[in-house]
Structures are given as C-alpha cells and as structure tokens.
Length: 408
Image 1 (cartoon, helix red, strand yellow):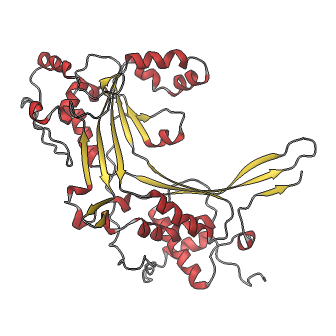
Image 2 (cartoon, rainbow, N blue to C red):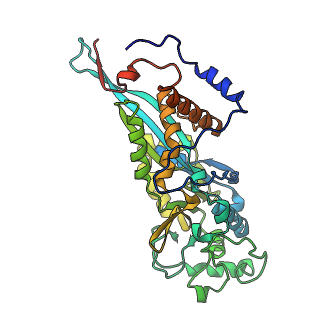
Image 3 (tube, rainbow, N blue to C red):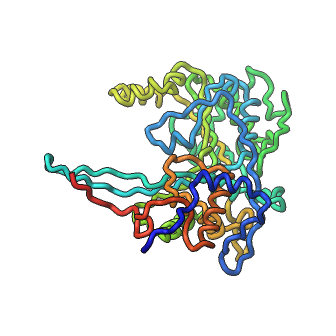
C-alpha cells in the first residue's frame, strides 16, 4: 500500500476551513433505520438553574462525585418555601445524560532485570457527548405531561424510603406536626405564601393530608425544615425510564469496530445531575463536606467511629424524585420523546463518535456543539473521499489498539 502523494489537512486547517464555509449547503442527513422518517431537529436544552451555595459531593466512587451535588445553605434547611421553590425549579430541569467513550489497550513491557513484566494500560481515545437534546420533548410535545412527572412519597403508601429517620421505612413521620403549630399556620393548610409553583404531574399539594394519604411536596419541606434534629439532609433525585442504553452502546461499539480498532471499548451513559443533597448547617455536616476531613477519615481508621456517629445522628429525607420518560407505550406502539428511538440516536451519534475516536481525542472533555458539527463534516467528507481526513498513524490502517509487547 503506497503512501498518499499529498497529506490530508491538519486539524487546525480543517477547523479554519469549516468556519469560513458557512455558505456551503448543509451536510446530508445520515441514513436512518428503514421504515422510519428522519426525526425533527434537536431542541436546544434550557439553561441550568444553579443550586444555591453548591459544593462538591465527596465519595470514593468517581461516578457519584460527578453526578451528585450538595449544599449547606442555611435558608434551604430553615425555610420550607425556599426549599419547595428549589425542588420545583429543579423538577423542571431536564436530566443531563452524558455519553462517555473510552478506548484502551494493554502494553506489556518485558524487563530482563525483573521476573515479572510490566503491564500498562494505554489510552487511545477518551471523550464525552452531551445527550440532553435527545431526551427533550419536541415543540409539539412540550405541553404533554406524559413525558415527565414528580413522584412524592406519601404516608402509608408502602414505599420504602427515608422519611426523616435513620433507615428506610414504609410509614410516615406525622409526629412532627406539632412543630408546625408552634411555628405558625402551615403553608399546606392555606396560611402564608401560596403554593403557586405547580410541578410536573405527580405533585398534589392541596393540603388535604387525610384525603391524599399524606403530605405533598410542601408538607415534606415543612417536615424537614421544622425537624428539630441538628444533623439532617434532604435529597432530590432524577431518573430516566424507558431508555435502552445497551442498544446505543452496542450500535456505537459496532461503528467503532469499523475503524479497525482492536482495543477495549468502554461506553457508559451517566446522569450528570442525578441528584442533589441539602444539608443542615450543623458542624458535623460541615466537617463531612470538607474534602480534607473526609479523606483523612477514609485514609485513617477514623471512619470506623465517624460513620456510625453520623448514622445515629442524621435524619434523612429522600421523598421526591423527578421521573423523565424516554419512551412509553401507546397501545401496541412505542412512542419515544422527540420522535427518536435508540437506533436513531446511535445513528446520529455514529459520525461524531467514530471521527473523534479516529482523531484519538484523549482529553476527556465534553464535545461542544461546534466540535460535533465539525466532526460530522469531517466524517462526511472522509466518506466521500474514500478515506478519513486528518493526519493519522499508519497503524490505524492495518489495525490499531491491539495489545502489544515491548522488549526491555
């Protein structure tokens, strides 16, 4: 196989040419699964609503650190109206799933001076894609509440949840209602600020606990804020239902194999805003949310004493969860939000993922919309020319990413 007479353009040249070619016609749409028309254009995700005084959530698991946030804002644990408004706002914020694509292979280095060889993991590519637009309802579906709902735990509903205690239970904590009487008239019962912020389907804050079987969101906010415990926390969660992540992973893995890549492919989809935790500003909560103190307790045997003490003192509330549907059944039909199923998403992402992997992007960043447009253009031009653009190593042509042994 001979070398080309002229090398392909560099990445900087391709970037410059794409920015000056705004007059060119749009890139043709890629082939979608047979029997289904191309879906409408992707909607733009709304701007994120910040959590007051947000701080990093400390955990030994990297996934948890990336997907959970925390706050020690005193107002959120003292004023139920402020807490309710925050949860109401966050309930309308869509989930932000990120697709992470990594490729690795093993490099074994033989050392004559040692009995065992050294095994090193080599990173071939590592990048992420924001999938939020694929989970947003189209303009025609924007008023359809079937796609999202807020689930609030009720007293006696049999749901196993943290209801203000140390462990999960299936019963409520109605004994704290006397705290309200000493503070004034409950908002749920009509006094104070009106509950004007209506959440997505599932929030029935009408104040009739004896009719609804327990408090709504406002009632739980009151219970949390008026709980006399010094160490307490309120957790709000998001989740996506009806989405088959394995189908997207399998399809994208197949596309990456067409690059003749022979290494290990790791594809994961994680919610970057899976949950947030409101902690009361107690000194124990402040210490546990200090990075230095947390990791000192982990490294030293102090966690043996610290964790049981926190477990005994903390009152946990995990009663609200925003549920976003990717797909639902309408009789025999399976309806997907935005008119795209998993096959459409994988097919739309394939040019971006394969081109980014071919360029060996290893910075782990989330690709911007401009970068994704450029990658689609380069992939399209590469297919039209019969080969991929950009300067690459020749081992990518004969097969790359395979495990190898290097002599010492």
